[in-house]
Image (cartoon, rainbow, N blue to C red; front, side, top):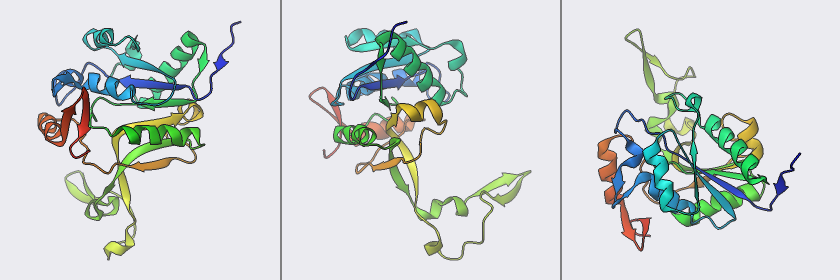
Length: 244
């Protein structure tokens, strides 16, 4: 039986890029400053300052073929059961981790997920996320604060066409009663091996928040591509937030 090697501070970078999309057809092949969103995610992975393996995970041959542009990128065709609209991130990450460890005979202690749909990245921030996991955090997610007027306790939903509070909680009288909430930006998720294997939320017991101090965009609709174009600049082969 072949044993798995422990390589200090080994990172597995997974770029999940399905072929299907509802808002933008073939979204992960959409162009931004002349490169596809998937290529921008790959180029971001190169900026992580640790020994790493980069996996491009997709059910689309057109997307997998992008790996041929980069010697360091390993294409991984997803099985059919991981190709639907309702497949969770943790399922894809566990699959790719197990496949990579068997193939590379390496135990990866940090797994980084870079989603192509959040292409504007500050590379110091990526490395802060990875540093946090190697420092003992179960995960590190990039997040942004949510304005208090959008707090979950102020949100409403429709039940049989009747308005209801989304969160069943005491009446909100003053905004000071509401704590700060956050939204994930999708820029970077750095996760410990234990978190990927044992926690479906991908947070773990002591997740760290890493704040993005530049405007980011998560691309779901065509207008988001225009916004990303306006918030970023192509500089020396890399995508940078405007002002960096």
